[in-house]
Length: 494
Image (tube, rainbow, N blue to C red; front, side):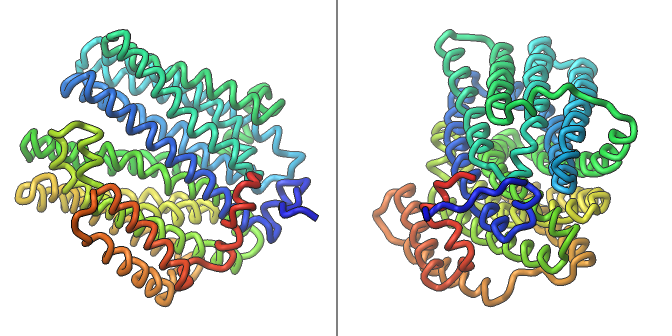
């Protein structure tokens, strides 16, 4: 006997077996570790870009990439979630045909969405280098989108080690490309072309990790495409609303607040964008198991949602604790000393991560239940809510008011999504006893945060260690989480 988990022959068996929960926990840990490493690399990339390009050109770069992020919410995030859910519900023998149709769908939809973005840059009169940038970065996004579709079987088979490598290398290749352009003294447009290099690397990795499945000829079977688009379009619409929602406050601030306050909020938002990827990854890891549970066993689904929600609370509180002391030095590292005041903004805005982590879990749970249409209404109502919060708070409190509006908006969105989910599943709220244990661990960490004479980043690291240690001692983590996160099992990637 070895200390390793037994390999299972079929991903169906994986998704419906007792081993599935452990694999989701370990997969979430592996993807989180890879994502944290990628965040560090991404922040280094941001620091190079902001310091080299300067305020104006950096703004142009971020504007184009933000537009492409909205496009990506349709072509990548929305289609990936519905695709992995559909694959999880298919028998293994039927998956190759579905996967070929998913690749074909991606090749059909992505160019159209990217064309819309490029036409927008032309119609609003952006400078030529921004239009060219949208084209160049869009080509890279197309390549990544198709490769991500080919990698969907790894998600369903809970093979998260390879996916963690892909996530990290995307950031690493971007950093190397940006660093080379900085050394060469490049102008703005070549920085967008780095995304093409990223796309080439992701395509190569997809062929290495997915094998022959990455070389399937794309298909466009009419009945299959109609069924997939029926599921995907409502979710894609919800994701677009979510992308607009995430960036609405800074747009409103540019209209009703000063450039300086808008800049502070923009710096905080740049840091938040890196952190938001973590709960999205965890939700994506969990989706195939949630879809299988929604099909077969509602009680198992409720249990999984509660467990994942508890994990979201722990992660959200941990990030808040770290940010209390680390916010100002982190903002100074990213944008230079001029951005240090943005630390106070980030310290408020990071509270939204707790709600974002929860509603990402609840969102994919609704998708697993085939109720993704309800996400359109919830996201639209939250969009109206955050607009009202911003109009009320920003004129009086500036960037910090914008941060508070973001937190309130995310709390509203989480409440709305939970309301819709609980109507389908019954009570899936985290227990009060668990919240009490989290509060005890957070209180122990808070005692460390107020210690004098310790550098901010060191104190943040100490407080996070105390929070996790105290939480472990008081039973904040479920027994299956403790077992799944044992080192010998986390290192067993699959």
